[in-house]
Image (cartoon, rainbow, N blue to C red):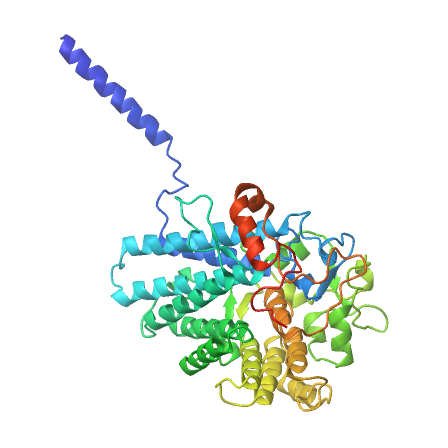
Amino acid sequence: MKNILAIILTFLVFSSCTKLEELNVNIKDPTNVPGESLFTGAQLRLATIMVTPNVNRNIFRMFVQQWTETTYIDEANYDIITRPIPGNFWDILYRDVLMNLKESGEVLTETGDLPGDAPSVLTNKLAIAEVLTVYSYAVLVETFGDVPYTEALSAEVLLPKYDDGLTIYKDLLVRLSAAIGKMDLTKGSFGGADNMFYGDVALWYKFANSLKLRMGMVLADVDPALAGTTVAEAVAAGVISSNDENALMAFMENQPNNNPVNENLVLSGRNDFVAANTLVDVMNDLADPRLPLYFTTVGDPPAYIGGIYGASNDFTQYSHVAAPLLEATYPADFFDYAEVEFLLAEAAERGFSVGGTAEQHYNAGITASILFYGGSPADAAAYLLDPKVAYTTATGDWHQKIGMQKWIALYNRGFESWTAWRILNYPVLVAPPDAESDVPLRLTYPVSEQTLNGANRSAAAAAIGGDAVSTKLFFDTN
């Protein structure tokens, strides 16, 4: 009888423990997340950090003086530390984007082919995740210079060393070329889990080659031979060739998946930004047909008026962001046809093998930009006839001609505009009188890296010439 009672009590204890364990399971927090979901999450976080105007995370539109501020003007005066912007940008790219992409690849590989999928579908998924990984690391390198790379994203290495920025960049090109070579354009990939191209591998292929083109041009001043080879390979393989192929990330109508510009400029109820006079004055002088597509008018008679860059501006007195760009569903723009054409114009001027003349690509870039934002072919044709715009008569050398029009075309794409400005040196941007520094050439390393990974951060700072916003990165040689 004692043995029977002991058995019954043991059964009841284990049964109770089992029931308690079941009660302690959070069924809304799955322990096994599909690789496709991790990819979707990384894609969203990447789009959000690149597009957001949140002054705690991304102030590149102000670095290139597309927008300026009203009441709180620290960021327009290049105060990047108070909020702390570098750390937030760094953390999101490493933790929320790159780590999710890494885990996505690991889970997809472990899961294997899904029922009904050809083996090449899994290969395509892994290649596409690799393309976004390359894109994200390139952003980090173009922002900070030397960054953790070979020892990054490892649970075993808590204090990763920093790798040389140029060495990383060249390795990223090798990885990108390998990913491009693995894509099977006849098969599918992520399908609905992909909010850029909805699984269309042929469009991912063109995006990847366009990224290769851009990265090649980033190296044009520091390694012309590698740049020329890289650019020629990308163009021969096929880059984005129309606005229908633009790399756009879809957003949804409601929070938290709406466009962060809508989040920060509409739903917040705040009036923190106006158009910057730096950009508006140039566009007014050119009678640019994109003015009503970029900004609102103010006053009577209606006019496009930019706030004084870096000053405290009255929101009611200056032009604001145009209504379509404020829509919740307005997409993030990772890469577009206009940018491709301006890159090709620059490549042609450098003597790279891309076909066509610099003038042809310059004209195509301007036209693509006007059409993308809603202008007409007639608008573009008339604009190109203006002697201030026409390639043969516009002011300056090719750096200035291309740089000015690329800056206008990359409106609302602050990061890409900032990188192009650092390479071409146009337009000439002047820091406001009370600015913390000249126009920043990089972000400083996060404060958390100084305190937690101090030795490696100090070595990296010494290697690039100092952890300052004025330090030129490897590609910024002029």
